[in-house]
Image (cartoon, rainbow, N blue to C red; front, side, top):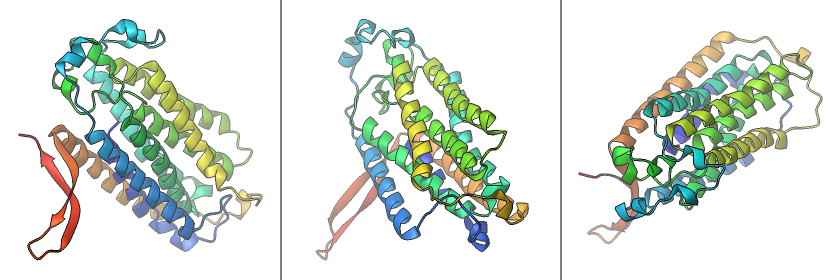
Length: 313
């Protein structure tokens, strides 16, 4: 999974949280403090950026490496997917994954009991997604595992691309599971004893499973990659909000009336920025542009540092 869209979409949630300011005193099952959550989230985003740099500087696979690949060396549980390749399945998995990341905050904004504390929930969503992003990028940036499609003849230029050894673990599955299980946990906490809970948890479990299926069909990940990604995502999605729960018994009867227009404006702005960023960064990735650090001294003797975009010709 390409993490630039995840980081940008998570950041866009801050825009969506703006309308909840006037209702900040609405009841909530969670306790959060900006002075605590903001540094944690910033640190997680920094770890994600570090992992992204590690990914971009991984060793590129060679023809000799490809020639030495043998499906017999793959664990039996994963061997059935060796050589698979389907751009259509990849497109479907992208749609489910990125669509879920954008849909979850929108649905939560229109959930009546969540509406009054949408700013708090959006902040928790950002922190939760950043946790998974950090775990994923740092892992994929240091672990080399060949993609399943490399064991077959297809893949074209992707066979020597920068993501050819990023099979472990399944990022699409992990991020989708994080979003859906986060939504289910938040729904559970804001709607105690709701009769809809079995359906909410069922949907939360099903969506990342569908993403995992199509990632295997696409030849992007082995089954074990997706099983680990599913476990990581579900654990983070549940545990982050649970770690913020307080001892207050949440009473839905105390929730103030919902203002749908406020939610629509906030979610509309956040979704527009998020989807625009997704489109931009997917195009950026397809052009072979990479991000790298730069530092040095100017002619006046002052040090400078930053990042630069590089495109291979």
